[in-house]
Image (cartoon, rainbow, N blue to C red; front, side):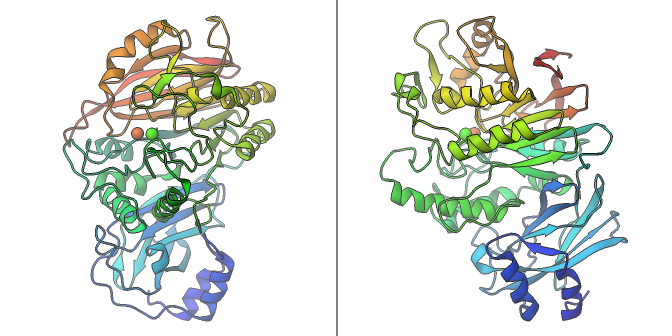
Length: 519
Ligand code: FE
Ligand code: CA
């Protein structure tokens, strides 16, 4: 289809651009469309993606990058990108199409917020620039809140350090029977070349250009592209999207916040450019990404940001980020989600009428005392264990709203099943929110943690199972009567063609926090 003013305007009515001044941009585009440009090569090297689905729409994503690992290779001009979305995989019943503008200031990334789709069904989409056509992506809308209960399935994943292993888990995920993928963070790692079967192609990234090239390196992986092309995603971040273990405006190595906030701005912007999110593009070091995804009447997924607003850990950290819990964590000014997000979450839990409240958080919520039973408690202070007041406030909101809450978390490159509680000193204290900790896609588990796993399970009444030996993802299948979690474990992520198997299965029933093993 040639790009003409008429077919551009036909699409403009259904097109909303995500980003600063979206309306302004749409109006400006109606006045003038970019001149045709000649691209130096195939521009869709990073694949396609979709995300943040609701009952009538979804965000479609791509980025034009003929030379993906070296800045993209695009001319420094606006480029018109045609998109179309169809009811069938042969693209015969196209129901929406339009033109978006890829702008050099956003690395020629495109986010199209498509509206007006029918609820609860699959769609197929693709992009085109001139004669270049992207691969086909598949996505879907969510059921409306009124729809009779049915089953929905999502996978959750985290921690995909590129050098540490292959993304074989994503190849298997792409073939799985899912409706959504939730990513809990460490989508990229900022560090240098690394070790394992692959290498980062440069030193630690700190600038916008370098973060863009790092995201592009990850996105060139065919297995990651396949998982993005197969399902809509809902993403939140943890630390490595910017800097290991950073807290708010404080970098890993401490130091002044001003240069770090410039780095954070670059990292957040590159993250926005490379992921299919319905949030405005950041214009500085701040980017509000906590938001909700509604899975009809079955579940509300609360995507939490437990990184951007947190206070730095006030206790001595003896081994990496682990150390004894100190009294300073009880200071009322020591926060994790921040006051605004904490209130947003409490309000959301109180207002939601869906069956399951899924709390998607990068780091582990339940207490994990690494040296139990010796005293004092020795925990990873980068997890919720470093922020016990934030955890208590959240769990009190769960109790007050009477909801069925399930925490999904990552970060520790290990699998675990347990439950968050308000009291960890009384072994008979009730479970408040079931927690499923998902292992990494490729990142290596700490060997020290591996040797402690059995002892941790034995000494913690609220932890039922753990495994640090496998990489993979977790499949969650939700119905009115049951929340099922199945741990999908690779034999190894160190070789490219590993098989995957269900290591163990768990179920949660409404009104009864805590999981029961079923397989
Ligand atoms: Fe990680
Ligand atoms: Ca992390």
